[in-house]
Amino acid sequence: MNIVTVGLGIFFIIYGITTFVLRLYKPSFFWKLEPMKQKWGEKKGYYIHVFSYSILPVVFGIVYTILGVRG
Image 1: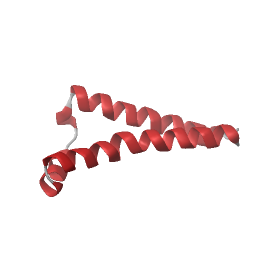
Image 2 (image 1 turned 120 degrees about the vertical axis):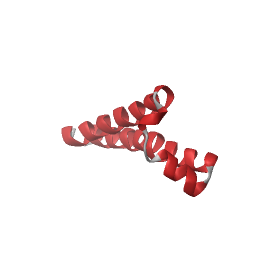
Image 3 (image 1 turned 180 degrees about the horizontal axis):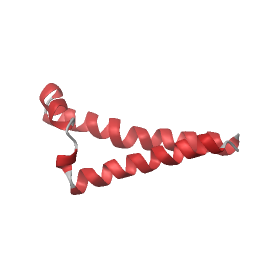
């Protein structure tokens, strides 16, 4: 078991969940969202932002945690 990798995995999971919760309760917190919406369009910019800052970190966190537990 690699503690550093497990710790990184847990950090990424917490980061992704935190950004998801903040997106629901305080969307003005995300200053990069508006430029992404302007560049990519309203829906596409929003989805790229959600994927990049919420979904992808959780997926990386799960992978890192599993790899860390396995050694």
